[in-house]
View 1 (spheres, rainbow, N blue to C red):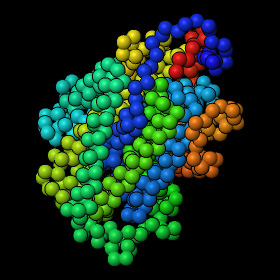
View 2 (cartoon, helix red, strand yellow; view 1 turned 30 degrees about the horizontal axis):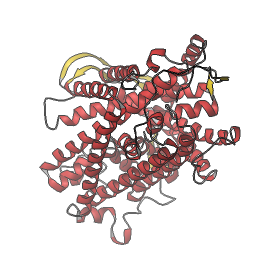
View 3 (cartoon, rainbow, N blue to C red; view 1 turned 90 degrees about the horizontal axis):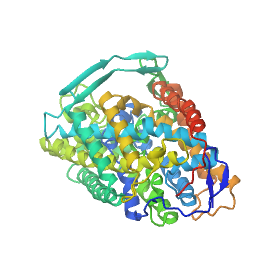
View 4 (cartoon, helix red, strand yellow; view 1 turned 180 degrees about the vertical axis):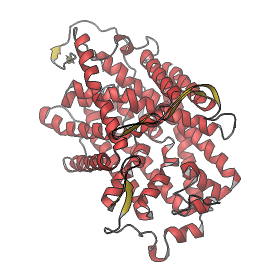
Length: 528
């Protein structure tokens, strides 16, 4: 067996007994799949369809956007399955990037995950929990301040618009902070407890979404919506979806409106759909705690992503059955506003409101509370295994956060530091702005990881691969081309989402140099 120094130079493992606590392999296939599903399904699927509908302006392209997302995500999961089975270690994607492209790229992923991707998403999901809790308890609100510190006005810096944040503690983000802290402590007491909670809430949210789909396809079918969205002989469905059809896109914030074709518009609207389908890779972070990981990791990735993407597509079809896609932003009724202009983009609430009228909002709020809680738990459980446990053992973070609790075998310090930074994001109000930058940064790392699949096939051809990526090399190559095209389009038309994300990634380079020089003394033994 070999271990790695911080510069990834192989050395021989010291011949001495190892009494350091190790991660416990206690997650079975169901729990691993529940983490995939639970981490993916948060609040996005309930709101992003409004923005996708406005961007595409076509029922066919509206659903087409989800098909693009499904293709990308499934190919990604199939490709990651090979890496997960080949290297079933705590840290997942961080490990894959480190082994394929070098420690700098692994660190930049972990750095961005900590700064923006994982903690920013947990903060946003937990504050969303607080917002929807306000449906039942009106005093819980983002405008009900307990301690308002300051308002940071918007500031334009080149293509970036920074600021426009409210700093302080409202009753809504206080509820979110309480969830952050509670889930951190729950996950300290063993991965089995966190997995049990995940299993319960994932099952509950799956039932909730299934109920929404079933209601829309049966008692919720709206004749006027079906006529508006599909028309006779599907004429309305294909409207604005031809190759010659042009769609307006605003370049940046306050920039000009330009006309683009369907290939470009489908890439532009991926900001919403890919965000909703993100976090499917979280199960790879917990690889050291999965039973029979060489089998269960690839299976959980494929089963989990396949289930979620099928549900997302069916939910979007359900919206078309209940609400007209096109609407009036000043419409007096739910139906008049349509999918495009649902109040505060809450399409799911509008759909249930159309079916059940006044009771629909309460039903949807309850479903979203279940969904956001389960999502936050899954991401809390997985995150600390990367940027604390795995990175610290490579000498790229404080040594203490790489230690496991002697009884519970969990990265306690990692969970607490993750929760601490997430609370800071909740109070600062910066999480919503950081989320704008996630998809571009994530796509860059997904591309690099799948490039790493090719690199490892060349560098380590004899390494056992219990599962090999389906469709290799064609499907992984298709992923790289599609994801790269989306990145190029976003750089051109949505600079406010891309350049800030790129800057955040690059800021990790001096941090990496600092840690690698400061802690590159003794070799760090990799235990998982």
